Length: 191
Ligand code: GAR
Image (tube, rainbow, N blue to C red; front, top):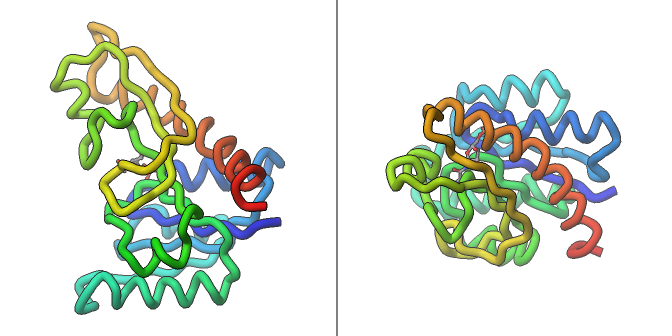
C-alpha cells in the first residue's frame, strides 16, 4: 500500500475522516505521518489518538520556507511517503516540496475553484451572495489554490442559511469526497 502524509494546521476533521475511511476499508493507503505547523492544533491530538506519527514544527524558528521544507522532506523520505494530502494546511507549498513531490501533492478547498481561492472561502462565497458553492480537490502547484482540478461537489446556499449551516454542509461533503478522491489519485496517478 502507498504511504500518505497529511498536512494540517487546525481542527483536523478531514484528517479524522481519512483515518475513519482507512479503518472501514474505504481508503486503500497507509496514513503514515501528520505534518503540522501549529503547536497545540487539535489535529495533533487526533493523530495521537489514531496512533499516527506527527512532525510538528514552528515556521518562526526557521529562517525561510526552504529551511523548514528541507526538514519536512527528510521526514517524508524517512517514512517513504508517496502522496502528500493537504487538509486545512494554511500555508503555500514551496519549491523544495513541489520539486520533490511533483504531481503527488493534493489539496481540498471549500469552494468551487477557481471561485474564492485563499483564506475564508466560505465567508467569501456568502458575502458575494452566490447560491451555489462547494468543494474542490486539486493537484497543488506554485499558485494559491490554482492546480489542476481532480474532483468537485456542489452545495446550495439557502436563504435561511447561516455561516454555520454552510460550513456544516461543506464539511459533510469534504469528509466523503476526500477519502474517495485520495483513492482515485492513488490508483490512477501513482502507479
Ligand atoms: C477545510 O474546510 C478545508 O477545505 C479548508 O480548511 C478546512 C480544514 O478543516 N482548507 C482551506 O481553506 C485551504 N485553502 P479541518 O481542519 O477540520 O479538516
